[in-house]
Image (tube, rainbow, N blue to C red; front, side, top):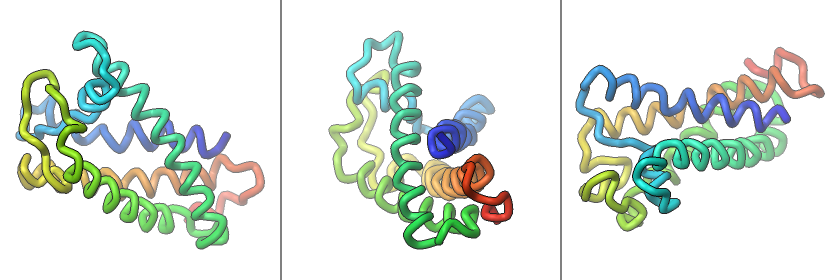
Amino acid sequence: MAAAVAGLVAGQLMEAPTYLQRSAVLAVKQDIFDEAGAILRAPQRHRRIVGWAGHSVLAVAIVQLYAAFFAAVAHNDHLAWWGIVAGAIHGLLGGIVVGSWPDLHPEIPRATPPPGVFYRHYGSRDVTTFVVGHLWFGAVAGTLYALLHADLPPTAAL
């Protein structure tokens, strides 16, 4: 249960900077909820909600992997910091995936160019948002997992 809640919250907070920047009309092209909805072949009018649900499920699954990492490598201690390490690994893998399969990005909502590794074709703001988002995801996931896990003391978070 701790991993599920941590994944849901971290997944939303990870994407918040992207959408806050987009709402402020800053030059951020990535739209992971729309992309995920397109990948899942949702109808145009439902793409973001389907993408949000898909991203949420994926975030929960990823924090399950983080939990295994926390137990095996971190010995369930200092999980915010170990979460940042896990987030760096997660971001590295995710950045490669984003660039390796440009066909994962069908028309969203119009034809868009492939984002490239770490969204580098979209510009430096997108790269920074992507990298920081994954590190933030790890820190939040580690902290919440430690605080919500019934068998861990609160001090395991930091």
